Image (cartoon, rainbow, N blue to C red):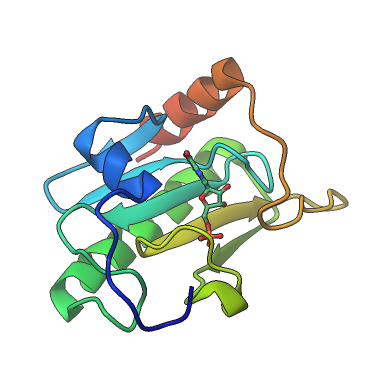
Length: 144
Ligand code: 5GP
């Protein structure tokens, strides 16, 4: 999918926002939702999305909704750091399929890095163990 096109109301993250598909949530308010990536590239990999903006990518979103996402990203990055003590944190965001985007509802990745631990490939991670994902989410939420 290229940069131009229509927002699809049935993308997987829209379904998560509507509660039609389950997600392991870390934080939620009226503007944003943070939840665990189900195919994590590292321990604690989570995602932040807007609940209000129907934007497929960074180019389409209004500044206010983007601001809410980025404030939440910083909060989550700090909480992940407190909870999991990584050696680094990568923040990524992809626009358009050729750039690596696979879900077309704008989202920002928070990916903790641990010294000497290789990342699973983007889009090639194994599905997480749900019990472990819930435990990690609870640890991160407790550090918010
Ligand atoms: P993108 O490739 O678009 O930057 O990132 C999409 C992310 O969403 C990937 O990291 C992928 O693992 C994650 N993902 C895909 N489907 C689901 C899902 O159903 N639930 C959750 N929690 N994450 C998903």
